[in-house]
Length: 473
Ligand code: ADP
Ligand code: MG
Image (cartoon, rainbow, N blue to C red):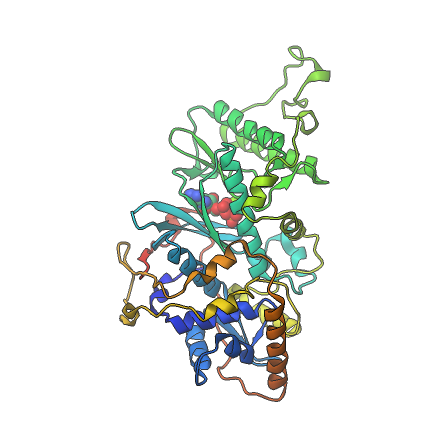
């Protein structure tokens, strides 16, 4: 999905206020009644509707009037909220080219004020649902109220927590820098995904190191679960870095052995095919009963001395709880009876489902407490009135304003407990809004007809668009 951060500099304090109001409303609504958005945003003189029109124009929200007049965030809207929060925290100040397209993520270069380049991963859980990926088809079977915002936020938090904990245990992973909503910022790995590497100086050594990582992870109580040539980066010195952690599970998982064997298998197969490594087991030199290896030299899951709960403390420190783990595991395994319900990549497909789900109460973004802080949003930066430049150049400088204040910090770890008073207040507002909507209130803005333009799915950097915008401040 194209991330046109350029639009960020034209958004005013009010735009962000209303965008945040939609996000907050989505805690309890898949489609947030316009009335509720207005009440949460609290702008004077019906200003919210004007702002909503602007947000629609920039494709930051999606309009749905099938059951009542309502809105929800698009991925782009969610991206903007996360980016804005991270810029305000000083994590980075500009967004550059896209460097990766994963199954369920987009990865961009970002730069800090002092020019350090980092990687920003925007999770897109649910996107896969709308692609012809057979193994994930069952997500669509019971398309109900699992929400991509919630899942993407969970995936990001999990990735951040694991990356941090693994780094602290000296696993070769990117340095975890920060996390907000569905966005993880990490150090940029200098190198290429192994899948793009045609030749290695020392394939045996690299292979040993990679298998060693699977074993060491298991010793720490973990299985990567997606350990393959796409998630292993390798640099010119043949140093290995592993990435992509949202699907990791504990060795105590009921399918642990299967996942472990699958990870091992992927590496064996890849090295055999790409680098023509042959694997044989020297039975003569080894006592079978005592061996850590299977017949063909694969590590045996059961022979590894595993310590479960080893990283629990570190994970908890990042705000990732066992409940979060259970939730995301359910989704990733496709065990859930419900599924992701919306994705702005495919509005054409989802309109019907939205109609079905318009009244579903979904448990998503825990931002209720932010209502209180809303009142303290900073003044809009005066620079925002610049004319829209035709095409952002690499070195072009666009700053994100400071107008969004620290409310975004609350979305970092996403505690689930909205205050009861606010919950009540929002529920009351919701009831009023739904009642008003049912009373025949007309839609203010016509349905957003945005459709995914069918962007490239290329996973090769060469095909990716070059774009760099410094974000205004
Ligand atoms: P997904 O979960 O969608 O598979 P990944 O985390 O595997 O996403 O990232 C997809 C691609 O983005 C990787 O194959 C890699 O090319 C690139 N990438 C991801 N993280 C980094 C990073 N920290 N540094 C450099 N490139 C990265
Ligand atoms: Mg990946």
